[in-house]
Length: 136
Length: 125
Image (tube, rainbow over all chains, first blue to last red):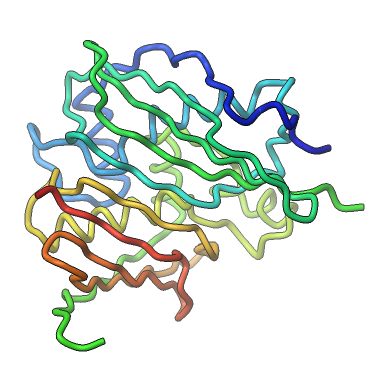
């Protein structure tokens, strides 16, 4: 089934606050082999942890009509206003910036604004999700 | 094009244990990145790396090349081909070229094929 056409432009509620801990940043750096010393800023792709939570809310919404096993991450881009740091309390607010269909495949573009505890923008994470058509 | 200084290439080994660690650290538990049976069940040749794992390697490469963390202002790519990770592991090769004084264009390959489309990092001014 196709994704609901009214999805374009929809803004999802902000995700619950996520506290960036030394442990979380260290685990992320270790998993990707990124050089990291205590006190360093978080790796540049670390904000995906928060953006991913916003994407999961989109994917799990039954009204949206996305079937999880048909979704592929097509594209990702970050624009950082500043690096994420331990002690940040981050929230992501996802907007569906576009929706198009090519041969039964839905291309959903999203933009998640990641803000800190005082509401200042830290990073924008743009993700393209490809929802493949059902095999007939 | 000529006259663009090329950065040193780097080769990063990737094994399944890395993907398990990344799944935990990133909060993405999709089993196609950990379980070969599930991966094959959806038509993949084997377990594949998270696209975001590969993009994290690009960020790591840029950090290593510029010698400091936190310099990346923009980073993006298309996930054009999966990085297939067999039991024996694989390798991701990354090479960057300065496009201008703040912008690094990257070439990211696995088994000789490009896996990211137009990966670019822009450093803070």
